[in-house]
Length: 392
Image (tube, rainbow, N blue to C red):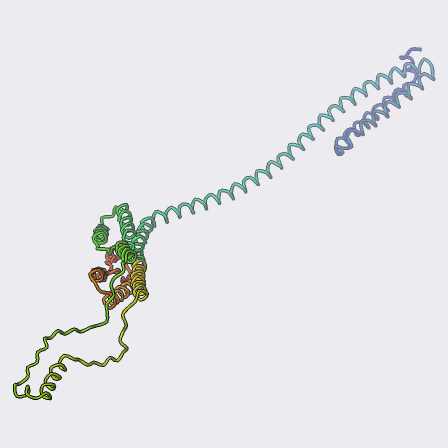
């Protein structure tokens, strides 16, 4: 019998087989749909199990066909065809499923990337906003500083001019440094010139007057005075000392005796005694009479005079006018009282000339320019500056 006869003889079996195949196909479609609905981790396992079950069923049918003889061969061939069809269909379904899974994985990755990019975008926008606020704050700060610097630039220059004039006053009053005071005033004049403000021209005029006044001021030659005193002390020569005071009165001794008294010896002796007594002087000294000076006393007096001159020179270097004049007057008195001769007189005259030098003459006032600057630069309602301390 061929396969067609077998089919005719057993139509129920064919129907059963077809129904089984249809049921199997329907079951496999349900399984495929369930596999698609399951999570990604279980999708690869379900197709493999279905395929294994189909293979086992096919082999079972083939073995049954072989056992029943020739009819089994036809049933086996039919089962093999069905299996091939089923394998093809399952392969197509598996490929579609894998493609869908790959699409799902790509979609999940894209979604994750989109979420990460969104989070990063939000973080960047937040950081950008913060940096923008900082930049705006810095711009405001820089603008404020620029406005302040532009507004206060003139005030800074005015303050510098005031400071330079005050420095000139201090150098002159405290140190009597004329050159330093002149340099400070000239620097202040240059700052006023840089301002280029016609309103400050009176300040420049007063600064020029004060500079010229300092240049014309007759300063004491301290170095020259100190050198003169040093020369006098170094080259002090031994000078003759004054001797004790002596009075010498030269009178011609003439005795006129009247004729009547010449006759007697007593009258003659009385007249001679009276004439001789007129040439004799008697004095009382409260202190002991000084003896004539010796060599040691002369050396001691010269050393004391040299010390007076050195003390006067040191007073010059310290610009101590009172001590300078005190030492010079003491040296002159010592020279006049203890020494004699032409050299002593010359030295006394030179000391008198040095005593006329004033080491600390009255200093000029340098406040006119500062007062004028305050007056011209004073803002309405501002208090007047304190008066300057007068020069000493």
